[in-house]
Amino acid sequence: MIRYVEKEDINQILSMMESVKDDFAGYKETEFLEALYKAIDQKEAFLYEEKGIVAGMISFSYYEKELTFLAVMPEFRKQGIGKQLIRQVTECFENGDMIHVITFREGDPKGIAARHCYHSCGFVDDDELEVFDYPCQKLVLKVK
Image 1 (cartoon, rainbow, N blue to C red):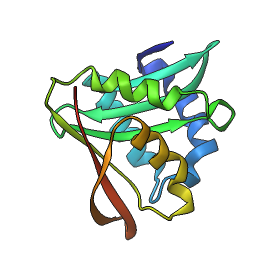
Image 2: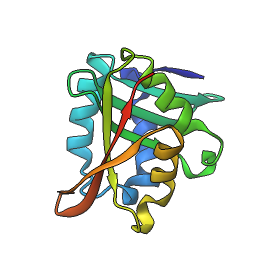
Image 3: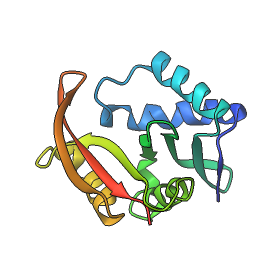
């Protein structure tokens, strides 16, 4: 089940982050929490819940038209949860809107699954950049 993230979910989300934090260059819990509280207040975060367990989470920015975070617990991967969360976010935007996400560059082992997920949802490669002194790439999607 997909629903908005609520403040009561934070402990479960932090527990999830312990399992996936190595997948995020520059992850700092205090900064993540600050962004999460803001996303909750602005209704810019969804989670996928399976039998009362947070299996995945996505956050985004209406203003920036950006996916700001996506993670799926390792034991729930390859079940389409990431794609469902991305589809949920795209429904928050108008047809024709261009949304983007920053992820790892092609060839980076950390980015294989993420890039596959984004590409399968229709994102295409855009600019290469550096984030937290790490080589990344912007991917874009025209909402239909």
